[in-house]
Every structure is written in structure tokens, then in C-alpha cells.
Image (tube, rainbow, N blue to C red; front, side, top):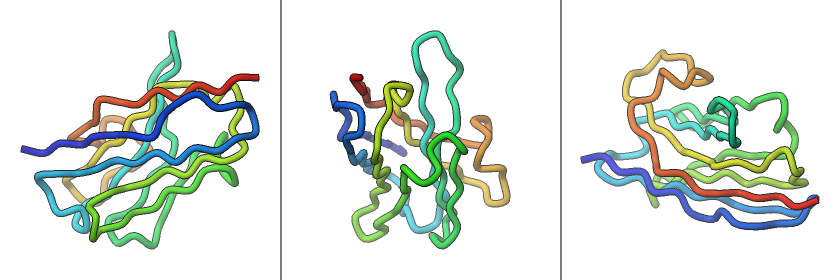
Length: 125
């Protein structure tokens, strides 16, 4: 049974930072690519960042490039999303996700096989 559990969300002022974590159980993280998505109220779930299973390749949405960093610690079976210079428009529920098959488009929501329950990030102005 694969489980993904996010943590680290909260309330922060604009310009502040947060680090989200996604703990994976039931699979060995080193074999899989991972992604972060977010969903604001009334909006579609959107891609934020992804890290390839080999760990060297990362991909970011234009809206977060230069402010967010995705990383993985295979020894801890955990993926992180370091968020800096946060803006009110970053307010959303953030989800981590795992993709089983290699070669899929990591920017597409439909590529992922397992999802966490989400963690709320609220950025006040």
C-alpha cells in the first residue's frame, strides 16, 4: 500500500518561506519520479514542480521558477518543496504525487498514480 503524507503547510506573510515535506511509504522513493501540485479555491489543480527519479532533473512552473526548489532525500524516502518569497497567489492546497511508469510527462496531472491528502498553504498580504 503506497501512502504519501504531506506536512509543513501553514500561514505565512508575503515574502516569507515554508518548506513542505512529503513522506512516502510502501515504495522505495529512489525508483520513482515525484511532483508537487497545488489547487486554489475554485481553480484546477496545477503543476508546481517535479523531480526525476534519477534526481538530477527538475522542472518548475513558470510562476514559481526561481522561488521554489524541489529536492529529494532517498534515504528518508521524503521529497521536499522549499518555497521562498511567497506571494498571496501561492495560497492553495499543495499535493505531492508519485508516478510509477517512467517516461511520462511530469507536468501532467494525469501522469501520476498516487497522491497525498494535501497541506494548506496560506500567504497573507
